[in-house]
Image (cartoon, rainbow, N blue to C red; front, side, top):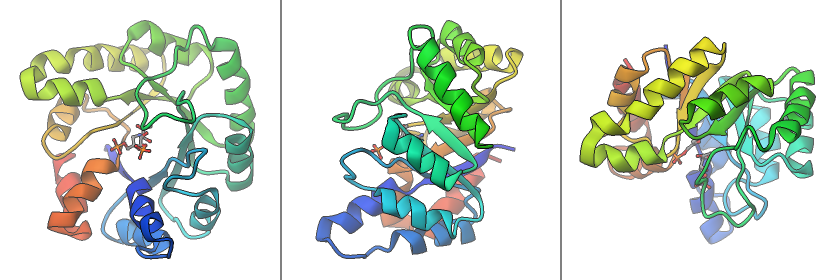
Length: 237
Ligand SMILES: CC(=O)[C@@H](O)[C@H](O)COP(=O)(O)O
Ligand SMILES: NCC(=O)COP(=O)(O)O
């Protein structure tokens, strides 16, 4: 079964736009779970443009599905992981000024950094996933640094999907095969939506989890949050 983890960053974007507490991020997370989400993902960024570090502490108290915290492993992120001990920490190589995530880790160049950080986080009993491009050698590198899972960065798939989906999916099939042979779990995320999700799932049926935020929250503006979550779940079955 492929779990749907809803990334609620953009709920926090809307909340922060007016400085109050509407929409309420905690309520939105609980509603996502009530509507069928099998996980909640957040990506607190250093500038707190959307999810704030305090949101993460508050969410930990109420989230009952898998809590996945994404981020660059700087000291503030590691302190948060130590304190919150989520089900999963997803390490992303984003610089602080990145408008959004736009690349995976170079698991060969960053091997010693990742090895040290991953063993620290795993010592807290937290599963570690690392965000990677769909490159077989990079995936092998993820296994060598001790990751439990990879998260395949799916923006290239999403942008090429519209032109030639059979070509767009190929590196992901290859990388998922290497991941499976290396004993890694397989997550995927970034720019997944109602148009491209089913084809990804059909071609990587053993996908453990997809984390979806931007497109899902945009869809919810038109279809409602409950209906939208159900629509995304249908694409995974
Ligand atoms: C790692 C990943 O792909 C998502 O966390 C994405 O970075 C969402 O971040 P924003 O919501 O800030 O675009
Ligand atoms: N890891 C991907 C994620 O959490 C959400 O990415 P997006 O759907 O907002 O592009």
